[in-house]
Image (cartoon, rainbow, N blue to C red; front, side, top):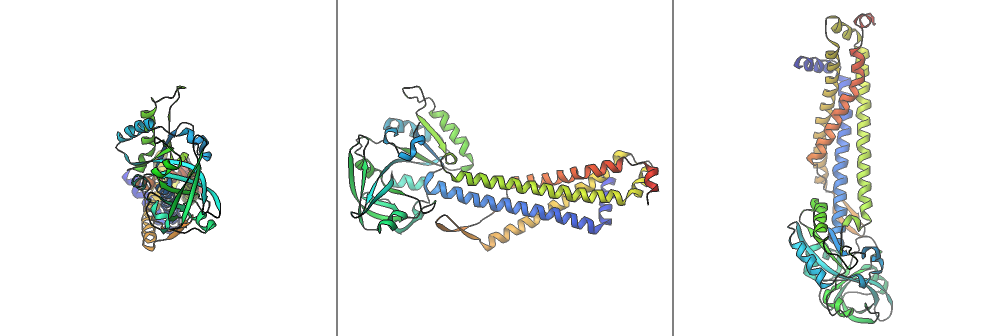
Length: 412
């Protein structure tokens, strides 16, 4: 086998230009695929972190049926204090849960005493909310980066529409669970920049203020947002928490709790899926490039070396040896292209990180693209390229192995 490798490498060196062009084409394909995978993965990570760390959390727990009616923010589907205690006890048993934040969500009217519009209000415990969604306060573009009792953080859309600024007095009016109406004055503490564009209408107040507006005698939670210390364990933690909460049933014998990851709560998951699908298509293009390149080179190698093949067959070389010889040449071309492509990819990513490419996402700016190569991606791409290179050499190799020595020696 070692002799076959030496002969195969010698043959590749003999045709330097062809070998160089083919290896270069494979290397360029590997380079672009790895850089695209690294860059798209970085962009995808930024999208997910902005959505989860700014408002959603990594996963959320609701009362069963709440998500289906979430547009109306129904107060009748809040979790009772007893249910919240059970949920909290379950979450404390899972070490991967870093923080969680109970929320009261309700719809109401927002007024500056001259004009009125609708608003979605989130009543939160400031410390727990910031620990669960640490990028929330980074969205405050005007005013104090805090959530205090008696103050409200309002979305930029409302501030611009009603010409409200930090320090102004406003009123929030809401319909309570029993149908009565109540209002409360607030001081505007800050203006929130929206994550998803100019349509955001979510404001934030202290959870005790929310209970006062809704006249809650006992705390009832709309949802609990959860943050993990390892995002890669999201599905595992979600399934574990769901199983732990499954024994809690309502009067109809159905589960009380509904555990959902951010993927099931945000439309931006579709964007992430599109990036994954695009990555798959890019990989398929690489496979096609390698397949065509190697097959073309090996067919030409067989055609140009017919007399040589006839000679080595005439001196007693077995067909399987000839087959192996051409497969080794295809393998060697694939390995050479992969090695060079990987080195170029590392260099390109180093340059991209040095340049610090920035871009905007939604209304927020200054995000830095920071691609990195994962060992799994390198191993997968390299393995596919080498496998396809050998596969592409298979048909020409079979052709060479089946040649009759006499006919091959007659070839001019």
